[in-house]
Each structure stands twice: as structure tokens, then as C-alpha cells.
Image (cartoon, rainbow, N blue to C red; front, side):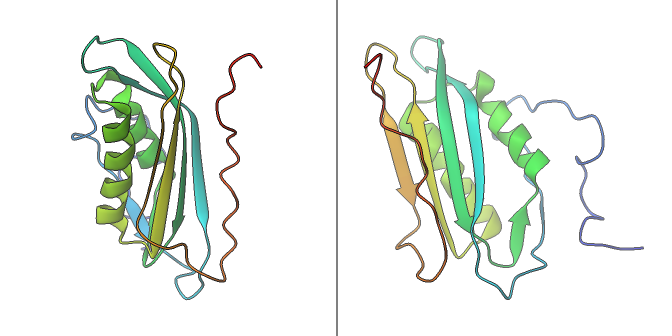
Length: 153
């Protein structure tokens, strides 16, 4: 029997982490509630990438909120895509914005925002925020809930 999940390749089996974000295959399913406006949140508190200059690891807490249109991102494919940044060298700003843009290009959501809350390296935390436009009215979209970095205070 054909379902909205029938074309998924990665769900339900062993999958190798992609070597790079470019090689990662995002998958999507039809939104069964496409006639309703609602928000979906993904939180990745252990996101990692590499500094493109030193090769040292960088760590972030990512929060992705989106109001879907016709498509939902399949969560395992998103997890593998985010995991592919583990060996990818890029600045915090590039990682954060490129994730948001790829999801927008792939899903065509009504609205999307991403917050990249990067842990300090060299004594400076960097937080990066990107969204597609004005937050839609009439949809409950909670604050991302990640406090500004305070150190040991």
C-alpha cells in the first residue's frame, strides 16, 4: 500500500553519516495537515562543525522553527544532514544561514527561522539568527528559549 512515507530511503534502517552537507540527502513527506497553519521546532543542542581556519571543533545549540506548507522534512534525514557538518569547515554565520536556506529551498515553508547559539571559542560566543520574513500572525511560535551566553555568572 502506497503512503506518504513510501518514498523515504533513510528511515527504518542503518544509514551512514554523509561525508559533507552537500552530499547529505534531505527527504520530505507530504504535510497531512497542510490546511492548518502550525509551527514545527527542531532543536539540535549538540551541533558541531569545524573552524575553516584552524580545523578545531565548534559547537552550537541550533533551534529551527518553521511553518510548513505542502512538505515536512523527515527528521532522520535532517539529523544526518546536520551531522554531516561534523567534518565541514565553515564559519558560524555560514553554517547557520546555509542550513536555513537549504531547508527553505527544499521545503518551501510558509516561514522559517533558525537560531544558531554558538559556544565561545577565543572567549567570544557568536549567535546567528536568520528568518525568511515577518513571523506569521495567529500561529503560536514560542521564544527559542536559549538564554544569552553568560559564562560562569
